[in-house]
Image (spheres, rainbow, N blue to C red):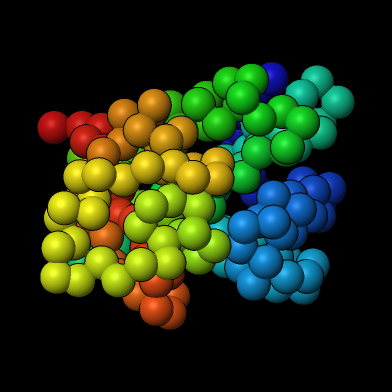
Length: 186
């Protein structure tokens, strides 16, 4: 496996990454990229100037995973949003996601960034934060979070991210966005 820049002239990878978004997010976030057209649009957006887009490929050019980041002008390049991260289901739990995150951290450092943040939606009660009214004790709920159905927040914790907050009801009542971040540079 090697990790390379995902470039707009790599038509084979573009199709594979779009299909990857549809497949990986279908179960827990079916509205994220419900079809190839929406996924292809997301892929095209990943090539913008303020973006990082990297893919893990095998020796035959098969895309094993894709990671991206968005640099927000308001943070002057210091904080980048991890978006998206998708790994082929049959390659999950084999180090592909971990390698992609480590590579992204280096890419952000090279650009002078100091932090990476992400939002991990819980739209289907995958955690103890889903399906409940988090107000008024939001911090108490965060402190007692439990993973109920394979939510990715625990993967991000394993690679060094911490929960820095939550946006209750971000996706409708009882459907929060879990905000996580990691320092990658000084």
